[in-house]
Length: 146
Image (cartoon, rainbow, N blue to C red):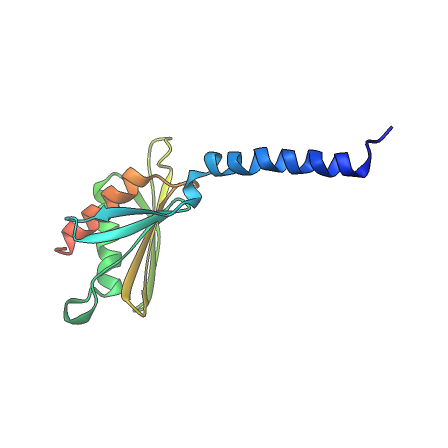
């Protein structure tokens, strides 16, 4: 025997009331978090497992190709092997693979131009890793003098 329609909808509402808050607790990567990068002069946003930040624009702007070179050097210095790179004047992608089987399986650093200047995005593995992303960002910024 099936319950009456009213009690089924009440059951569904109660189930959703329990599941929706749990989904927020289980997936903290969806929440945007402001994090310092570099010497603390820049603020990045960590959301969905990726750390993104804007490099200064104007007369001291950092070109995409410079950001890509810094990403490659930073990844190599941290023990990653560069397994892919594509670069142009307006966008780049540098991918490094970590030699040991750890959560740091791979790192992807994107740099591209937008209305604010050069934007950099760093993602570690499938789910992200904030401390490693920050460390790569800090290394990149140190290499380009920021």
